[in-house]
Amino acid sequence: MDSVIVALASLLAGFIDSIVGGGGLILVPALFATYPSAVPGDLLGTNKSASIWGTGVATLQYARRVRIRWQAMLPAALTSFAAALLGAWTVTQVSAELLRKLLPLVLLALLLYTLARKELGRVHAPTLSAARERLAACAIALVIGFYDGFFGPGTGSFFIFFFVRFLGYDFLNASVSAKLLNLSTNASSLMLFAAMGHVWWQLTLWLAAANIVGSVLGARLALRHGAGFVRGIFIIVVGALILKTARDAFLG
Image (cartoon, rainbow, N blue to C red):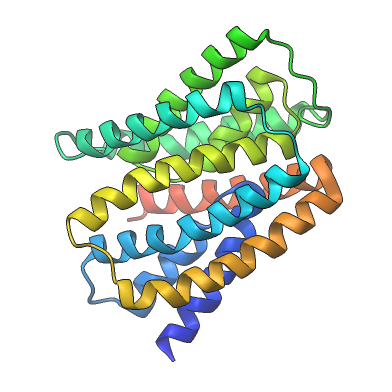
């Protein structure tokens, strides 16, 4: 029965994650609630081992229908992979407590900016030259990739927002590009978790299968309804992230 519960959570997580990210909001709490006596690292590693499959399938689905700007995103994906490894190492050396308390405020500023700019991300109109776009994408990947390895919550939302705000992407194209970079950072994190023995491989198969189903459904819905739909889901997910991270930071 426990595996059925977390598989359903994984399906819903894959659905949300394939549209705007934030699947960890669903699957991670479900794993911790279902297996309260487990080592936290085992549950976090198992979450990564499942979600990477859904993210990969969603990326492939989007790539068939949306033109990914590979000249910018491939270098950015490599940058985010290395940055996530560096972030994961750094968190073993210093405390993330200050960032934990600042995160809800940063997310709130991001949400308010998005709500105030009603046309933000509705039209896909990249404004930078190829070289500058590549440089900007790598800079974003360096900062957010490091953050993902160091702390993590809201990584997909941060990628999407920065691609919309600084690269001129609409929300659909930003979401597609964010999937590629999230795939890279997830692979980086999973390598570390697996090397340390923090993955329940016997549970991964069921969670991964459910996550893939959810990702396929979510990606199809996003492709059908476009940037406006993705923007709406983005606002909902960021709002949920604000509530969760504020509760974690200030209420324990």
